[in-house]
Amino acid sequence: MKICVIGAGNGGQALAGYLALRGQEVTLFNRSKKRIAPFMKSKNIRLEGVVNDIAHLDMVTTNIEEAVKGRELIMVVVPAFAHRSIAEKLIPYLEDGQVILLNPGRTFGALEFSMMISHSKTKKKVTVAEAQTFVFASRAANPGVVHIFRIKNAVPVAALPSSNNPIVAAMLDKVMPEFSVERDVLYTSINNIGAVFHPAALILNSGWVESTSGKFEFYLDGITPSVAKVLEAIDAERCRLAEALGVEPLTSKAWLDYAYDVYGANLYEAIHSNSGYQGIMAPPSMQNRYIFEDVPMSLVPLASMAKEFSLPTPTIDSIVQLASVLMGIDFVKEGRTVEKFHLNGKTKEEILEIVEKGLIL
Image (cartoon, rainbow, N blue to C red; front, side):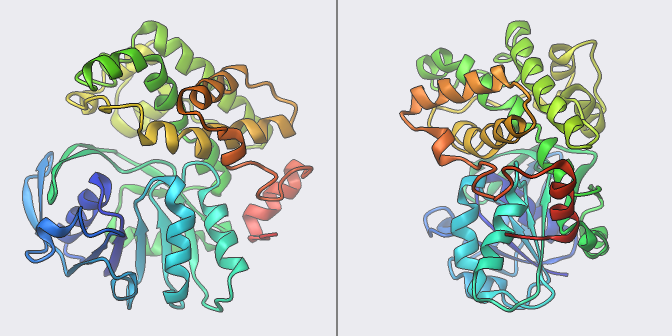
């Protein structure tokens, strides 16, 4: 299959290399040349860890038009705060029948992407879908060298509208059996595990991050029993929202079993039972996607939607407030809210109709 991977961070490089090793014809696009310059000529990516091999790509480029031309599947692997800018660059070059998968969408990623396409002048018929999380736990050692710590057993995905799920399933079954197509994007968006694991853990370890430049294992050292209790409170608020929307809640502890085959009596034990987290170091500074992506694109929309159903989210709100103070940014103002997607005032039934039929306002 002809596939384009957009974004050459550690995730994009890992996914491009992995797909190429599976026999797919892969192009890799990155907005700036700096990250891809070391391997633009060779077009080789070395994968280490659970996969040890050198993958050869079809093309490595900063030209998005040539990157997506003739590609059946477009895998967007950038932080969610970059979805809008990628959509703006991508829309003029879309072709009928292409499937765009956000890896991951975080919360309401597919809705935001679809709105931009719907409001543009393009007449191309494409399918937008989102993954609930990223398929790998990976880190880039050097440009063109990626360490994959673990491949998740399964990753939920869904299309917007959900009536396009069979299109997505037929395409992904050929290239990534790890993907499991679920009911709709409410399931993938509300069961956003990154919202639970990332921002609170980073903020509660901010002193350690700044004093050591992140020289500790993020999950195994940073998530102590006390930190895990905060994550469990965030998780409980998220799951109550899922139930209010008629979405089957996937608790973080259940997700660890689903994705990694690990179990614990509580979230702390489950996280520390996951060998896939061993060796994953903390970010070197607070200027990180765990804040700039997971607060405005995960926690803010979850809290915003919860307020529509009169559900309190005190723990989520406190993390959003702390992040705003630390970064000097009003993340509520900058983030994804129900007002920006015209979901405010909508009943559960009306929201379900939007995701089932793709009624983008």
